Structures are given as C-alpha cells and as structure tokens.
Image 1 (cartoon, one colour):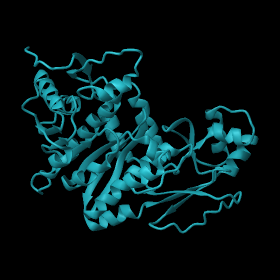
Image 2: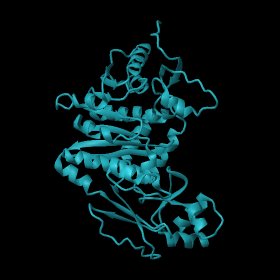
Image 3: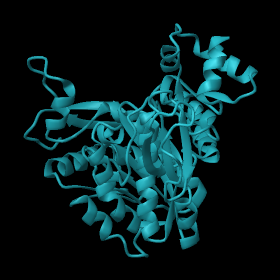
Image 4: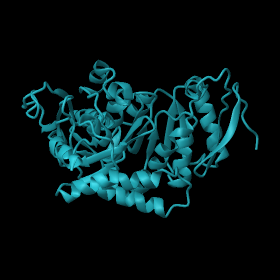
Length: 398
C-alpha cells in the first residue's frame, strides 16, 4: 500500500478494529508526553480510547433503536480514529468528518483509505461550527454528533443542537476540568453559565454543569437534552444527550435544573430544584455560611435502559475495548437512582479524628442502619447515600 508522505514523523497504532497512522512523538529532556501531544501536527490521544469505546457502543444502540441508515458527524476529527472505528465496529455508513487543520484532514483521509472505509466517510477541511451549521436544514441533519474538542464543548453546543435530528444523540467531551471543579469559577460561569463547587465531589458537579449548560442551550430551540450516559474518568467529563423536539420536553428538563448548597465546615449539603435559589445560605447543622453551586442539572446522570443495552453490545462484541469499560458500566448502572453528590469516607474520618475504615464495611453499616448506599465511579473512596452527614458520623463512631 502506498502511504501518503507527511512533513512530520508517523507511526502505526492499533485501536479497536482500526489500524491507523498517528504522529510519532519523540521525547527530549523528559518532556511530559501531554505537552508533546498538544503540540503535535495532528492530535491523537491513546488515553481517550475508552471515550471512543463508549462512542461505538452508543452508536450501536442508536442504530438498533432507529432501525434505518443513520447520519453521523464528527466536526473535529483529528487523526480520524473515531470515525474509522464507527465505520468498522458500529457499521456506520454515512459519516461526515471535519477539521480546520489541513494536516489532520490529510492524515484522516489516509487512515480512511488504509481501513477500506472510503465509501462510508467524507472529510472536509472546515471549521467545526460551520460544518454543523450547513447541515442545520431539517432535511440534512444528523442522527449522531460527537463533539470532542480540546477544552470546553460549549462553543459548539448551539451548532450541534441546530443540526441534530429529533431523538438523535449528541456526545460531548469536556477536558477543561479546572473551571468546572472550582479552580477558575469565573471561567466556569462564562463557559457553562453556572457556579462550580470546589468540594470532594466536584467532578460530579462538573458533569452536572455540562449537562445544565446543554439543557439551557437546547431549550432555546424548544428541545430537551436528557443525559443517557455520563461519566468522569482520566481527567475529562463525557456526556451523551438524547435530544427531543418540543417546548413541553424542553420545559420538563428545565424543571430539573437547580442548585447544590454546601457547608465546608461540617460537609452538610442541600439540593434545591428550580430556576431561583430559595434556600438559606446558613447551614442548619452548624450555622456556618454555605457555598452555592449552580444552576446545574439535578436529574439522573445516566439512563438504566440505555446502560443495559450498551452493556449487551459490549458483552456480544468481539472488539477489544479498554479493560476498565466493563467496571465503569457496572458502576454507572448502580448509581442510577442514587442520591445526588457523594461522601468521601476519608474526609469524614478526618473530620471526626478517626482512622479510616474499609469502604465495604462502611457501606454494610450504612445499609444495616436502614439507609441506601452504593459506591461511585467518581471516587474509589466515595459513597452515594441518603444518610446525612450527622448520621454518617454516628455510624462511623459505632
């Protein structure tokens, strides 16, 4: 096979069923690999493999649900690995990819040809928003759009919403976790329209802020955006949104926005749904001033039926996925219907000056006391429970 010549060094890697060419990174003076990736001629991050695994499974679910040929868009394709995998593993046949980087477009075309999927994928040298907007005509919209930028997905939200079909899926990846986790609260307010919380469960808040921004953007167009798969892993947040037309649907999701009010002193927190904060900012446990986060999404982060279906696809698949995927899907399913936010057992033990304890034993004690308790994928020492902080302290002291 004749390989197109590139001005930068390349190497072949395997991911899923795809064999692709990617920039070859040469480390000098122990330079961090992430710095090299960010400066490469074309961006490819092997650590995002699990992200692409869930994209394949989600598309398989959507294909079965719609039962007709579907149209897909990846407006920032980079090396083209995601689109190639969707064509090979999810059997997608109408994929539109784009990138504003000529080197990325050339490399994506080469990878498409190498994997014999040239009849299924078109690549355009084009700005991401422009690519989506030219497909916003009702007869030309997409069933699935995957927005995976470097940083925040919010600059592309409106274009994605305008170009998605009724009951289509929009997948978003956010890597700008510093603003979302409270390090840069003004940047979070600017990008996501909500205030973050710098707390032990800040990664959950981050996902809820991403979803909240999506819900508000969709509602402008009289559409609902409801999460069916959301998770945090490897320093990024990932959200799959099921989109549905109609003002009543939009109103339904808007009603699930609200605030989390948190006390840094005693770890008490309260949840308040609604567009306006109608709760005292004074902690009713210790009297300390409470922090306010939001508005954000306060509904379910994932849908149990969606998770069941993609678990089936995963079990029946002959694709080698990230080994962490099965554990992640199991954890996400356990967390459906679990209380909002979680408690870090080590944080509570430190607060009451007690040595840390086994997570499994603590969960058993919580359940024996008549409360709900499940582990969370957000933190290996985290517990989602309907017991409050005082009840958890008393359980730990027994």
